[in-house]
Figure 1 (cartoon, rainbow, N blue to C red):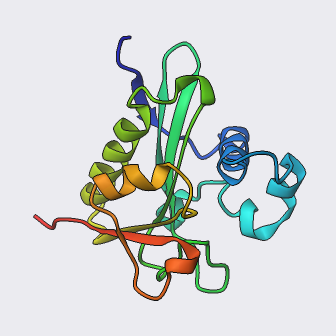
Figure 2 (cartoon, rainbow, N blue to C red):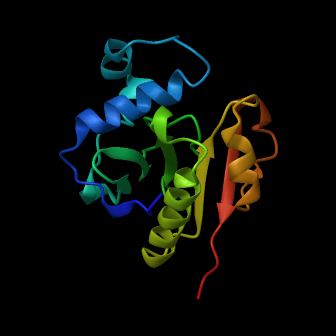
Length: 162
């Protein structure tokens, strides 16, 4: 298989982020609907990129989208599941079911980490349910559990400052 093409996530790709967020919240089977993702604030804030806020992301594609990784800077008044503070981007990662187990998630994650370092962020955070196999990927890339936030599955990666 040839390597996917990586490109920046555009702020107008709401439909992609809605589908990715739905896939993420339903990682273990159907629990939520697309309407839940669009209407429930705890999901909806992951479905749009606000470049003025500092949000950013990367898409992997060949003929179709294979996956997407994105990071949002949510305010304390509207925190995400992996919220640490408003200066720490919270990342989300989704790979299309047909493209899994091919290294695309790791490629996207590493590209997003590089982007975060270029933007001079000191940390990245995320939230992952304990039984989600993606947790192994995050651990292997240096993310660690946040003490006291284990129940929420919050993890953080400290970025190397140059």
